[in-house]
Length: 309
Length: 309
Image 1 (tube, rainbow over the protein chains, first blue to last red):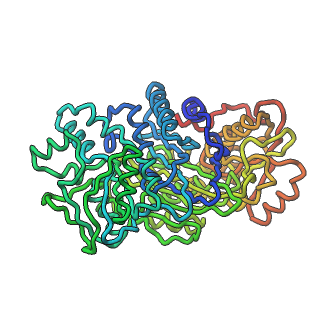
Image 2 (cartoon, rainbow over the protein chains, first blue to last red):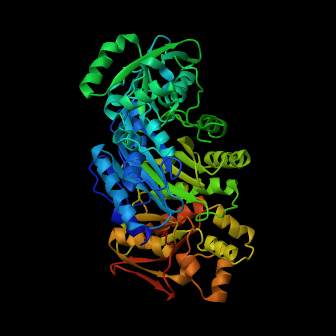
Image 3 (cartoon, each protein chain N blue to C red):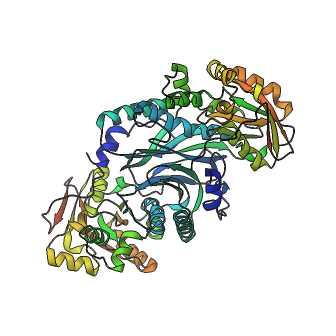
């Protein structure tokens, strides 16, 4: 099978977005932006043995490759539109490709994004997706907009993906819901988009709350105080923290793909309404200040969020 | 060094394009398209041991990673704008990173494109660039526009990169100019852009003329006849063909990154003027017909252009 047949066989799906003029199958894809909109673009790579285990299901790999990229678009407040896929495969495994392709197609339909191009190469398994979204001019939520006095919020709950990973690494079987936290993070696209003109800054939590909130603080040139006892935890993480008094999983664990955002106090009612309307848990965990550092009340452990190198 | 420091240290360069609102350092980049323009986007990956040798210079790897992506934008007739870089590295080698970064920055300045984001991960060396360009609405040169009677052209000369690779694989030292053909292909951006509204179809030759021209034929639902004795060859390839009577290098060798395009006969004068004005060799090698296949006069050897799997 040559590259052309591989792409035609597994990755040339019908487009369902009229703004895409040309998708898979030429030197480049072509698409149009709505008037008054800007393009937002992000890239994330998943590598075997780093971001997923060697025997991971192609179904999970495809879902997560897409979800982590969608999460970046959500963190900007954008609407995800289309993406390219660069797939480096050690061999031509038709069964693997069939499962990967089916999962990616289903996930793309679920989140209403279209695959418009990419590259397939031979080599150690590596999946890179470049996601494009659009947003009305001047309404993207950047990391740099937090001000002293703003509330700090996180979506969903924290630490379950890290707990799952910890259990797997220790040879303990994780629960079904912990596996879902690790393998099927939900990009907060609707909430992110609804937070435009409400949130003052936003980031998605991929490397751990402590590290990712610190990026907001650095970009915004502010500090913050957060309270460990306010962190939203699901039952398993809550029990783990009670038993071990180890807050590092919800504070420094990666792979949550929840949003951490800031907003002025006047927005509390609106944010509560959004949370209820979109059925996404949103928890206020602290406040921005002028101290230029991150104080975590109730936690004295090491600050060791995920380091790539 | 964490990912944040790595990016800040090696890849956060000053932007020189006012249409980019936000570059490296947030969840996603933001940029604006000029009114009346469409976005074109392409992705190409280079993998160690497949696209370059294990001991390849990071200077060459950076240049080529950018050039092969620019070549795709050139083949659409677009103007290259900005790109994301996803860099998977086996280890943090500061010397390697310094050389890679310097070369990528210089190449970006040369071709007037800006790095706006990306991802760095740990794993077997893999470089994926996603390149964005813009083009006036309805003026992209697709693979699907060739018609019977159109002339077929190629830029530059063919086969030198394949000859270089062949020599290296056989333990023969290639010449300096052959090494340049392999490591420093020149994306034909100016010519590609000038061919809008002149060329009826275009592709860049990455996998070999025979295979890539066949993509035009398939997309356009036409056939073609080309003449091996009309292929533009530099001296070393010409000598090799004379000695061996083996036309497979210029016909099926990959890595040329020249453009293959078609145009109606009425455009001959204009194309000659463009070639002279832009100082890019352009050679007419055959003609499109209705036969639905590619006939190569003067060649009976195997058609074995590069296969990715």
